[in-house]
Amino acid sequence: MHPWITRTVEVPKLDYHFEIEKKKDVDEVQKENTLKECIRKTKENTCKFDENILLNNHKMIDKLGWKMNKIISTKSI
Image (cartoon, rainbow, N blue to C red; front, side, top):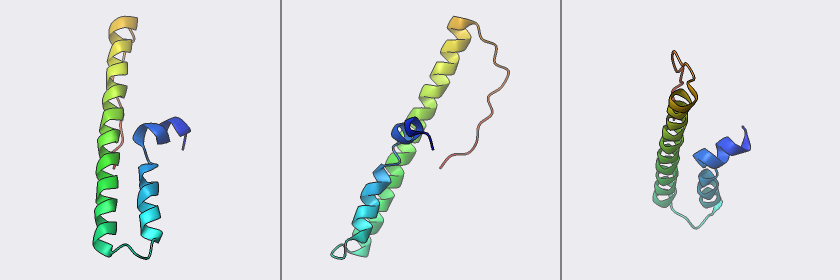
């Protein structure tokens, strides 16, 4: 995965979850809550990333006169 994608979507937020997961003194409920929060933040950042991509596409269409017939996307998280 390219570093700019990792930074933009903030996959490193899951590193925090994995650190918590390794600890012996953390209960399962806290681990589950940490995972849910990491997933929520990742989804939120993915949406922001997608919005920025669409805005940039519209700028290229409007300001540069690019022709775009369709946008092909894939389902994310």
